Length: 485
Image 1: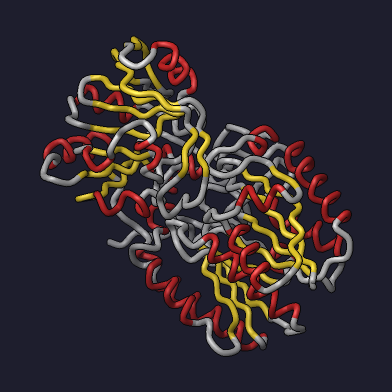
Image 2: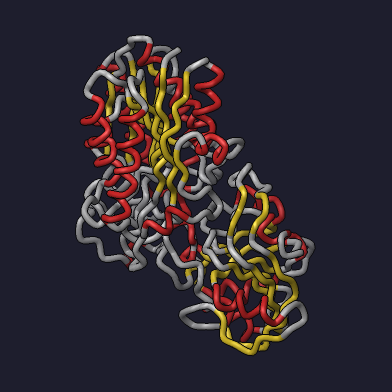
């Protein structure tokens, strides 16, 4: 029985965020499990829509011996502190050396981890892993849809494979695809890689694989996997990391270098031709609220995607400007989630259901009012949507507050609003809201899209900037994708 070591190290780093990512952020659970080691890793990820879970299932089905080493993830935020990066590496290094002789390694990485020292944190992790194991042991990693793939990552790994969906409903499936590549390598096959980096950045809302052009480009990538072409990945990249390798890329593996290169170049030309399509309307808060107020109440919910305060891309999910504006405008049946405000959640629990909090909630342009406590929750519940499928949420004490026509769901830990279970936990039915403000960019579409009559992407406050022309890049030399006339 061949012995395969597995581990997951996940962080999407927004270098424009001033909030550092510490060891504690990796220790605590949120939507995903907290720091876990050894055999406990298997139970922590079992049944979840996570690449590591899918990889473990595929390995066990193929009768490999699975040796779990480490699971570590933290919510997207600023640079990972060096102390945290090195502490995680030390744990991984000890575990992999203790594991004994290995036939292969599978890593569940993000591909956009940036530490204080290393702009290419995932590349450094792969480099060190290769140095530990030598050239002969296959090392295969799955990467996030938003990976900023580097030459170091490609040269250090035996193979890399990326998600195909955003919302990421295929994470577990991608882990299984990575195992398929590992099996090719263990069978003695030589996989030739072709890697192409593209010359522009794609803003997060327009990377959605449910809309064009990404929908058809991902289909092209999938259809290219035929015959001697064993894997094709299109990575739209994470544009909020100001690093040299930030931006979209293509990676193909085939039985010959010529075939891999030809496959990658064909897809590259299709992505380049689609550049003007990577754009859409960003609504300003006042015009989005005015529009929603005018057309709400016709049987379905209008969703305002508060993309700039998306915790899933490194924002604090704590900006209350859009809430304050909604109060001033007298918005009817407007529901906002999820606002991360631990102090307000604590105050709500102290006041109890029916109590009234006279306070300004959130950060930035705070929303001041007489907030009645409608319901309370522990923040611990099972996710039910396709993105967070199989995950046990732990968002700390939560509260549902109401002032005039505005309802706000408050949490103690930040998490993007991408699962209806977050609302149901507090007794709120999202489909009954006339206007639903979600602090998310794209992932919400997987679970909320069906209830929306319209979706407006709103540009409010927050570190998850959608208009990339507003950012001052110092290292990344790729400009934002040009907008269609």
